[in-house]
Image (spheres, rainbow over the protein chains, first blue to last red):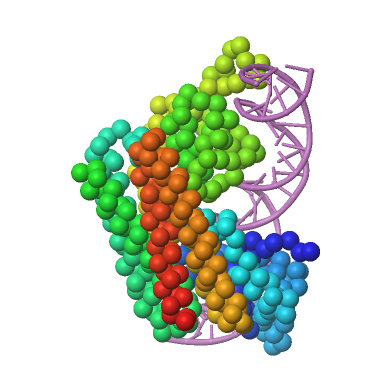
Length: 177
Length: 177
DNA sequence: TAGGTCATGTAACTAGTTACATGATTTC
DNA sequence: GAAATCATGTAACTAGTTACATGACCTA
């Protein structure tokens, strides 16, 4: 039995499936353009992952003749298709358990900041940055609406969560005031 | 200028500040009991971090005499205090940008699952697991309410976000149906 | 005195990042 | 022909995980 794929590997598999046939370079671009930067889109991140997926027999790479750069055309194998489907549908309690959030992590320790002024400034700042993120996401969604509907619906979840964070931050600020 | 601390290092610093004076073992327990499992609470994770913080001069460890296990009492140095405050208040756009979520990651690729039945099953499953997580978080919050208020308020943010996810998932299911 | 908890760690590994490096192709 | 983009990668590193290992202390 093959080992469980990491989130990045699975996600890469999904991106290749969406774009296939495509080059690793296109995959990188897709990661770079994504609404959320869960992973670095640099070559050092993506190329080794693609290599690994290939070694696992989940994708195949056809060398494009006539391109001296070594351009390769990636696409999923049958095993890749099933691995992708399994990753999606085998969502477990651990993955669904929680939503990690660096703003919330800091909030746990905000009481340790001595100055009331600084604490307040943090809340205001977090609110402002979250509003900015919401605006960016809305803009992003408008673009995505024209493209794949499933990407649009997925990103919508991110908007919901940012809005929930904003609501929470406002609640906290009222409480502090 | 010292390098920027990682989220885990900063978070560990915060936990030590909350519990000080305390042993590394207590820190591990705190991570293990946390509502969200952002990091493993195993010895191999925590001990090296504590060692690093000590080497950076952010915490000090007084050897407890009379305990042959080598029990040490950790607490923040003055530099540790400022580093902690800086980490909290220097929240930037990158940290505030988005809320990563493994459920949402999978959603991006759900359209690639061939069977409509499987797609639907995924949505139902995600909903059920999210509801479970919400129940667990609520129970956790009830306990936390009695303890530190700041931890309670922070964890409340997690509840808000899980609820937002549930709302989103229900929206998607209605749309699919 | 036995079993559970408290308390320390280490070694091997894995995944992901950063920074570097090269050259082909296309476009102006 | 210069500049931007397309396209490939590698090497060194860092952080975090898993699994292992040891022994003291406490309580029934």
